[in-house]
Length: 220
Image 1 (spheres, rainbow, N blue to C red):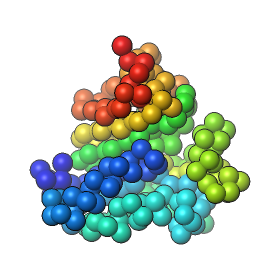
Image 2: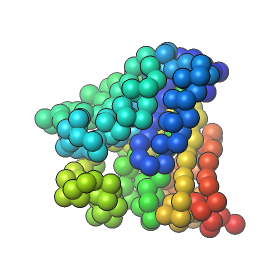
Image 3: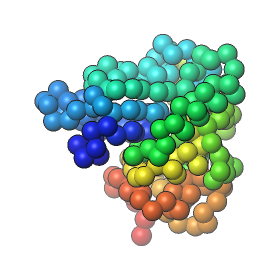
Image 4: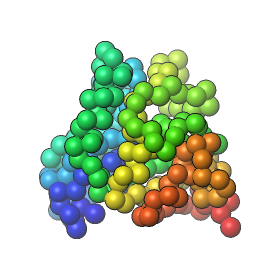
């Protein structure tokens, strides 16, 4: 994408799944294989409330895995320290709207039966936009394992909505491991509905899935 369009605008994810992708990009940059200096990045989401310097914030994650290693033109992420989540969602929505359509949105998928993309939990509509979302118990329990102190996990997030994601020209979904297998299968089969937010991806004309064997085990 970046080699074809050096001034691309990207939506990028966090979590364990894209770490290898960021390592590959950083190594390619180091060897002169890719230039991100004209690229603009929007992150999918951020916990709320959380300090930007907290090691489990997605702002810290992005610096650790990409931003501190690969120069970019601009990088935007919701501010988990903002005093008002609704006002912060509106600010981020405005920035994102000015850059639409995104050239490429890279997504992960929530674990187990959550089927969330970004933090669009079950019940998120196809018309949902950047907003504050309360995390469901299943999501909080799973994600809390990544915190040194599980009690520190925030109760909510600021996330791009389904409508924001689907406006991207191209979408790439990456999933690894058996914990993603049920969700991937449900994404690709069954009714397209808010009961499985990731199923809305089937309404987009340019979606690719990059799966390992475990994540793809239920696909027949």
